[in-house]
Structures are given as structure tokens and as C-alpha cells.
Image (cartoon, rainbow, N blue to C red):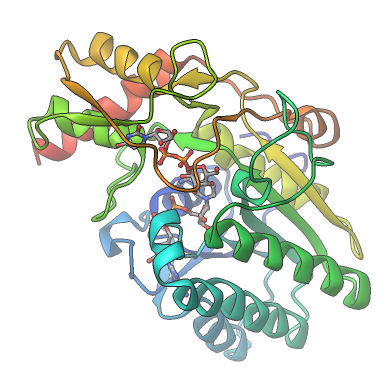
Length: 331
Ligand SMILES: NC(=O)c1ccc[n+]([C@@H]2O[C@H](COP(=O)([O-])OP(=O)(O)OC[C@H]3O[C@@H](n4cnc5c(N)ncnc54)[C@H](O)[C@@H]3O)[C@@H](O)[C@H]2O)c1
Ligand SMILES: O=c1ccn([C@@H]2O[C@H](COP(=O)(O)OP(=O)(O)O[C@H]3O[C@H](CO)[C@H](O)[C@H](O)[C@H]3O)[C@@H](O)[C@H]2O)c(=O)[nH]1
């Protein structure tokens, strides 16, 4: 991993027992940094915390306060992955998202301020933009989220800007597009799975009979929705670059995607090629709140952070997710 500096960092990773947080923790440890994972295991798994990281089970803000209160060591920064992130659930139970995401983040910001931790990298999302006006979404695009999940992430982005301006926090929000793939023994294994690629792979393993295509009447070539799939290792690597480029008093925001869109049908076809399974698919109604096309412009991350995604081929991304899925199935 290119860090932009050779300095050994002492970091707190909230949500490090989850999909993206565990991959990021593994990469940070390999790059020689020290990591304490804080996670309440609400959607994560204790055995996903990479070996070599200390693990503190608890709420992101409370457990971080406890850790910093120990006063045993100074921390260089926090990577805040912990969140509720199911779009459908956020529409049915918004309070869970406003409390779980926004209230937790504000309390975490206060804890960092109180203990003088000066750097923060936050997991934001493409869902902050809503239905885009441009083919490639830049960070300057209007933010009009179409679901509560996206609205809570946008609210946190605004709060971070205020804390950076008022209290000198060095902060970066990374707006992920569709994260996929796996890294070694770390990958996506949500009890409630809503993401397209793991669902399609569950058909290939025999755990599901078929995949539902949510809408084939979108204004796209094959009628299905288009997304920008980014490999979880490329995403993880952007975090340390963000940490080392963060500047006191500034809150920078970067989109992370590959700049290429694939339709739902194209993803399913790629999964068929990778797995050799026929993967039956049926057309179902559109899913509420789903934009037709979401593709990132990540020029700013490339230019300002020096970020260069390396695993941009969809076939390779799916192949890594498939290897992880098969290895877990074989125990
Ligand atoms: N997966 C994607 O495609 C995607 C896209 C955009 C943004 N994101 C964001 O990236 C982050 C990680 O997503 P993921 O896919 O790895 O999700 P995940 O559910 O696998 O991981 C989230 C982790 O946070 C923990 N957690 C949740 N609330 C907590 C709290 N209050 N205190 C302590 N721990 C808590 C969970 O137990 C879990 O281990 C989230 O913030 C999500 O919103 C994900
Ligand atoms: O069984 C399924 C699952 C998904 N889809 C479709 O596949 C596409 C991708 O869906 P995902 O659920 O995999 O991902 P989303 O684009 O909905 O969501 C992702 O991008 C969002 C930004 O818009 C948020 O950041 C969110 O956290 C992140 O998972 C969508 O068009 C969806 O309708 C299907 O057709 N069938």
C-alpha cells in the first residue's frame, strides 16, 4: 500500500469487524500501522477482526471514549466505518439511522475533540447525491439523497465540515460507489444481504434459487440499472492516502469509483462466466429509491491523493468475491 508517508501510525478503526473495515484493517496492519478495532458486532463478526489488531467490543463513540480515556497512548487518527447501511431498512425505520449513524457520529466527533485526536476519515456514500444530472458524478454535483441512509451520511458530512472549520479537525470523507470483491479471508458476509454481487453468487452456491432483477425499464441500453463497482482493496488503499493528506481545519470530500458503469444484466453475465453456473434471473419491480445510473468521477482522488485503483476489471472483482464465497462454504 502506498501511504504517502513512511510514518508508523496508531489508528482506531470503528466498524473493523465489518466488510470494508476488516479489509482496511488488514491492509493497514500489513503497511506496518497499529490498529485498535471498535465494533458493536451489530452486523459484523468478531472473527473478521484481523489478527494483529486489538479489538474492543462496543459502540463506536462510547468504546472510543473508553479507549482514549485509558490515556495509555496517543492516537494519530480514526477511520469511521461503523454505520447502519441498508437502504430499505432506512426508509422503514429512519430513527435507527438518524440515531445509529448521525447521533453516533456527533458523539464520536466530540470524543475526538475532547481527547485531541486530530484526524478523521469517514465512510460517506454515493447515496448522498441521489438521482444524478451528469453521467460521471463529481464531488460538486448537487446532493439530494433519495433515501434516509444517504440523508444521514450527508448530515454527517455537514457536521464534519463544521467541526473541521471550528476546531481544526483534519478530515476526509470518502464517497464510495459500489464496493465489491474480497481480500484473502476478508469479504462480504452480511446476515441480511442486499448487494447484487453476493446475492448473485449465492445463486451459484445453491443458497438461492434465482436472482431478481429490480427493474428492466430504466433508460439504459438493456433496461437495467447501472453502477460503478470498485474493488474493496483499492477502496481500502484510498483510506490511508486520505489520512496522510488530511490537513487541519479542512474537510475534503472524494468520490471513489472506477468511472465505468455496468448494468445489472452485465454483472449477472459476468458472474455466470466466473462461476460457470447458469444463474437463473427473473425480472421484478424496481426497488424504491434506486437511481438509474450511478458512476463516479474520481479525478479529484486521483489528482489530490495520488490514488490509482489497480483492480478495475469487473471479471477480476467478481472472481475474488467468488473465491472468498467458495472458501467460506468449504469452511
Ligand atoms: N458496502 C458498500 O458498497 C458501501 C457503499 C458506500 C458506503 N458504505 C459505507 O461503508 C461503511 C462500511 O460498510 P460495510 O459494507 O463494511 O458494512 P458492514 O455492515 O459490513 O460493517 C459495518 C460495521 O460497523 C459495525 N457497527 C455498526 N454500527 C455501529 C456502532 N454504532 N458502533 C460500533 N460498531 C457499529 C457493525 O457491527 C459492522 O461490523 C459503512 O459506513 C457504509 O455506510 C458502504
Ligand atoms: O437482488 C438484487 C440486488 C440488487 N439489484 C440491483 O443491483 C444494483 C446494485 O444494487 P446494490 O444493492 O448492490 O447496491 P446499491 O447501488 O443499491 O447501493 C450501493 O450504493 C449506494 C449508493 O447509491 C449506497 O452507498 C449503498 O451503501 C451501496 O451498497 C441496483 O440497481 C439494484 O436495484 C438487483 O437487481 N437485484
